[in-house]
Image (cartoon, rainbow, N blue to C red; front, side, top):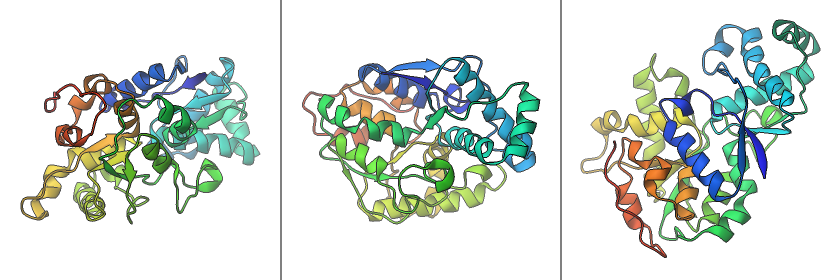
Length: 299
């Protein structure tokens, strides 16, 4: 299987463990990721708030490049990148006047036939293969699947899963042998766009998300967004200032890392050393068919 690949900026910098785990899992599942040549920033998370034409033209350029490479679909693991690409595709198909302006800016027409695929969709489509290739069933893990704002909404743009009660990440979790918990905050915002400007709000929102995951019995939170991961992983020290005494940090892992563990890939190959909340306690709970290598704290 071959699919276009748009890593985006975060996967090349602050959250490169996401890119590492995606590539490692793709190789294990015999999926060829063909990177979009000369891709550029999709404009998240500021362009759409400042200049609508630019916010569509930036991801539209990537779609044009993908079409030039004869790609039928582009896989964008970052939820923000996915949403911007999908939004551009939707706008170009439904707003002809703006589409003409975008085409003029880019100097070329953009083929809206190129599909855009999120991590939730990609891995849920591969659930059967993941289940078949699982060598380390994660049967002792209870996990909270966190969608955030951008994986399934708005429904007219994403056109995937249920925007109010999604199940795609739960499908992936179940395929690894783990148990998805029922909880209330799966679709609540983590405050991603305010990470720097309103940090106190992000800490408050993140604390509420993690507290609900704990209350549901989750031993970790599964995400598919670099910004969500940053807010929920990096900011737990700040959240702990008002947490219950003795409360342990809650690991936050990418869905690709979860799949990689089930496939028997080494934690180091999945970038698990890069997390601020050490996932070692989580790995220690895994009932393995073969022992996982020991893993130290953040690198």
